[in-house]
Length: 180
Image (cartoon, rainbow, N blue to C red; front, side):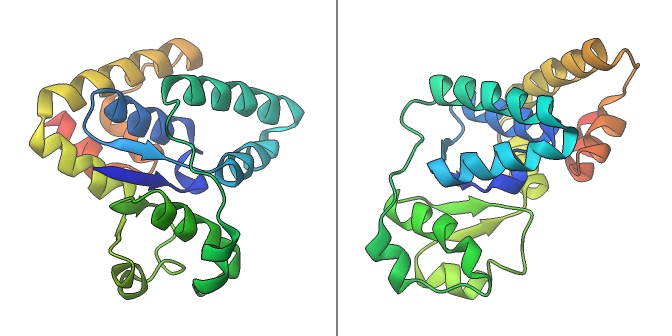
């Protein structure tokens, strides 16, 4: 299964680490474009100049981990596609050009399921997407979550629970499933 990761799921960090961690298990193949990665880096500016620099380092690591994830731009394809927000057409074009099965995004309103279905694509909320992988391979997702939790505790100095950490990262159903 190939899934385009929209820029909004790369930020916050915990969501990104869960999505890429599950991809590292072989559960799915992540796809993105240079523009999606650039949007991630620019969104990280909210943290200040160091946020963008850190994001660029993380982008380089993601590209090294998934060297076949980058889908080239296809201007002609973008010209024939339509979405409610024209600024998101490049994401749809990436999915179509990359022969993806769907798009993982938090942005439901700008990716109507009917329009995506016309291109043979699904829209997937990251929480539901990861929860589905948890139900299919609980041990693999638990191992990823444990690693993410350990890293969050180490970096923040806080004694996070998996449920609280994932809830803060907008993955509440996954957090609940992992804590029961």
